[in-house]
Image 1 (cartoon, one colour):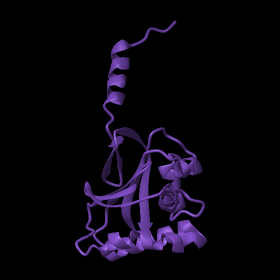
Image 2 (spheres, rainbow, N blue to C red):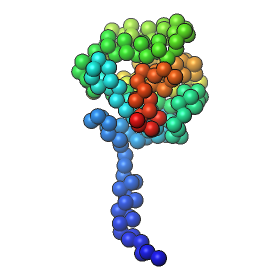
Image 3 (spheres, rainbow, N blue to C red):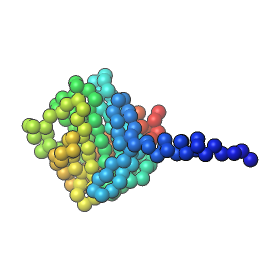
Image 4 (cartoon, rainbow, N blue to C red):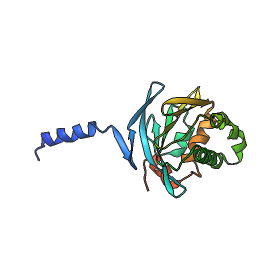
Length: 189
């Protein structure tokens, strides 16, 4: 029987226990996020490419890790998507366009039902988008999806159906980027 090297084992366990964040494209994402008194775990994270550049890093937070996109999208449980802008080329208008295009792609023929739901958010003339901004979409059952910018709440959109379409931007049958979907599901291509 081999002797266990206890000091090496303790060192390894200590190193594993201190892993507090994941770095993707220079962005540090916390391994956990607390939303509405629920501890969420980083399910996966990846880079969104558009306009021939890396525009943001996204992280998906769920109560229990899963590689099943449909299960995550349909779950009526606290979840969050964190998006950090990584390009100075992303303006308010480009970010708005990206979200609306993704929503249209996710909703398909049902898009007219959801199109107006973010109008109030985009109507806020003080809403700027700059490199380093962190946007979060936090879904809480019974409340809806709360939009935050750098920790400040901007708007709440009610309904599980809206959350499904919003998360469908990244996880749906026709996601905005296949590689990002795979990364968010913890199965990078």
